[in-house]
Image (cartoon, rainbow over all chains, first blue to last red; front, top):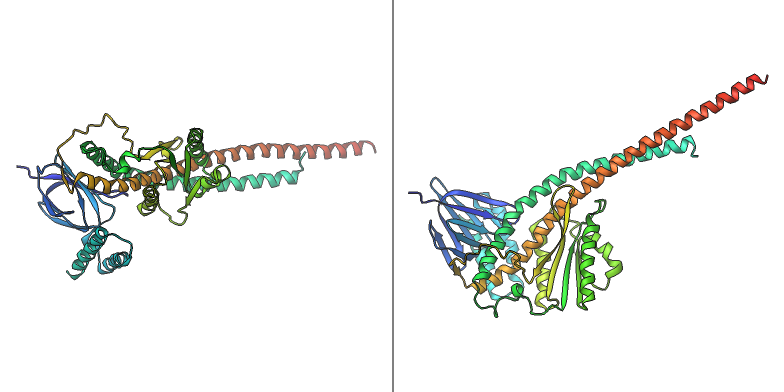
Length: 132
Length: 291
């Protein structure tokens, strides 16, 4: 009856999270949010800035990611990301700081539309966060 | 023969040198542990990245339109070499080994009449290469200010490489670094990152039917630049562990040599002191006898 699978989140510095008893993971995939359950088809996708929610039986954890790649294979979900924060660790100051950097980036002239879209997305997610 | 005073001075100078090398060894040992940990922690990321790319590239059907970063420009005219060394010296053969390896590669390329461009990461590499290859060095990067190896720095190097690739400044790119095996052994490595060489042909890329979102090509063209930064980062981590390991064994040797030297000098000092006393005694006795 086991409905659980394994999730591993790694960033370049270390293995950020390893959990074996996950029931569902919701990821901000490039073309929309996506919920992954056990026995999902093998999948490779991108992340846009957003929130990863990891549900296990007892708890749910939320993480903020700026980018990343997701691979799901044989009930192993690997998420590679260069910047990830646990939401409960983020306080208002930290969020403001990230927003500021992002806003500065978005005000630059020579970026393409896709990049601008991603940055705007990031700002929006963060602003929502700081409201809650 | 050196006078007693000179010997005394030498002994104390060797002793204080020994103190310094001993301290450096301890520091290197402490840093090594951390660097080694970091290198190990960083491995899953680059391994996973590699796997995904392998899976992706085996799934790509249209070789013609595949991203240039994967297949190359189709030429092999200009080579870019990224030589990664340390910013500090006193670490034994660490830097020299990388440079030696790199120089072999340089000579091979120049012999084939290809164009050579060099980027040095770390100031020691630049110091050693500037004499012979000054005109080939197009950029030097140093991270003296950042205390720890971080991904941000690696990303910077990666972006520089990609920028230059997109401007069609080179066709092939290789990085040189030391791979950490253990404290005594570090292996200088040459790794080609553009075009990507998949040297693992026996890889079990089962050709799984992946669901891609967005399209494969788009994922690949987004992923490959990241992979370059990741490879650079991996090289930096390996390098830093190697540097500390190399420094530790070099300083260990230096401490031991200094100890031997102190022993030798002390014996010499005692002998000449004894000789001086004997000489004085003989003078006194023969003076007394002549009375």
